[in-house]
Image (tube, rainbow, N blue to C red):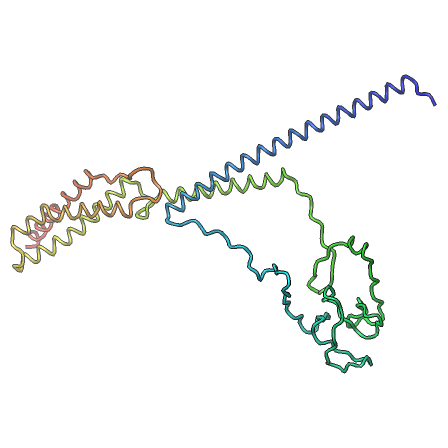
Length: 322
């Protein structure tokens, strides 16, 4: 059979198109992999930055880093060679009996009902129970289950075919069912989910930083309004002490010079330093760059004006009542 020049040219064109399609597919796959690697590196950088932000937040609120999680203990399925693993006994009426436990029989095999028959099965067949009537000591399969009389036993698989058997998972009913195969994972979908989770973590981290930048005392107020309120409150407390001194002076416990010194200098100074300490202790945010303002001139003016003004108001009130 001879091939014409036109057929040869058509085959050459087809091979050239297939080669170009293969090269284009390889280039597309390479670009996709580069994009995936770039996205992974970007997410790694974001996760590193989020970890550093969480460390700063933990240090700001006084929370240490959690200790590393301990590995699985020896009782979590990791046995040592030469040691037998103790398994819990099956519940009554589950239909499966252990090879080491008593095997009740009702036939004429020489063992009375409720007695214990010696186990001659190998160590690998611990989950099979030997029942009379089989004749060869093999497990009965479905025929050995209660209420399944007349059903033939499952045939035994050879060694070569047994290796090709599907993996089985234990169902709640006690029977073996084929395990489901794992679905194929799309890296692009997983990266998109990771990116969304990183965005959510950034949003929550930003909210946590905003909360950490608020002080415990009057968090919604501005720093100036907070300072005015604190100094005015300390001046009011000093005014209460001033009234106590005035009453003590009226009964002769405090002389006039001492009362004047406390009203003009002592109580205002106590109110000023009290407000300064309150702003430094409860008016300071957990996370703040530098030292927050305490408005010392304003506090000094408020404290050294309100206390004497309160005393003058008290004197005018007494004179008006007389």
